[in-house]
Structure formats: structure tokens, C-alpha cells
Image (cartoon, rainbow, N blue to C red; front, side, top):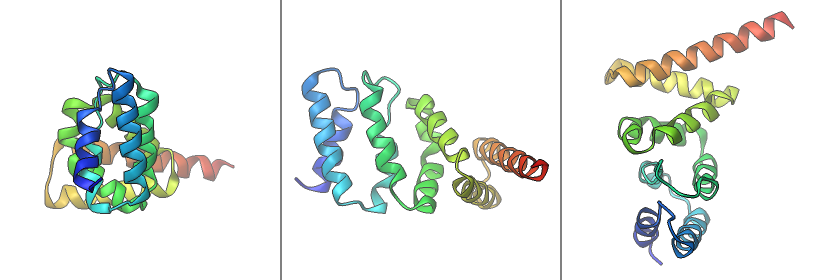
Length: 146
């Protein structure tokens, strides 16, 4: 199956309301994971949907996203976060927290958000950058007390 058909299958079945939709989603995700392309990252993020009936299956998509290069994944996430907040605010929060929980990812996130805010200011980017900065400072403070 072509990459475009696989992406279309993920989109068409992202609510996972039937066992057939779950199976189609899982099969398409497995195929896409075998042939990763960083250009697909924004589109893959936008498949996330808070109306999904089986979040445990959707976590498979989160794991695929996290298997990409950290910088590429974070740049793609930042590029779509304003759109993603509309249909997948819970998934956006999950990705945000998972990024903050990794020291290297958090640093890349904060630096990338800072750069984006300089060139394309957005209140959402500012809030995310502030959150990453606070997390990094708290980690540094914690390390200094040890």
C-alpha cells in the first residue's frame, strides 16, 4: 500500500469505533513505522483525536512519533500544535508532558520554541516555551541540591 493510502487509512480509522477500524489503524501504523519519513511527521501528529475510542491503540502512534529523531519530531509537533489543540488537546498535553520528562528533549523543545517565538510569535508557543523553561530550571535546581 502507498504511503498516502496508509496515511488516509489512519485518518479514516482514527476514532476506532469498531474492531475493523482498530485493525485497519494498527496495520497501517505498522506499515508506516517500517518506512519512516520525517516529512510525514506533521500529518501523523494531526491524526491524533481526543474522540478516539481506544486510546491504548492510539498510543502506538505516540510511540511511532517518538521513534523519530528528537529534533524532527519536536519541530513537527510545534508546527501543528495550534491545529492539534482543536481536535486533540488531551493528546497535545500528553506529548507536551512526555517531551518535558526527557532532559534532552526538553532542551531541544525549549530552544526550538524560543526560536519559533522570535520569528513567528504565538501565545501558545510562548506558553509552551515558558513551561519548558520552568521544567529545565527546576531540573537544574534539583541537581544542584544533590
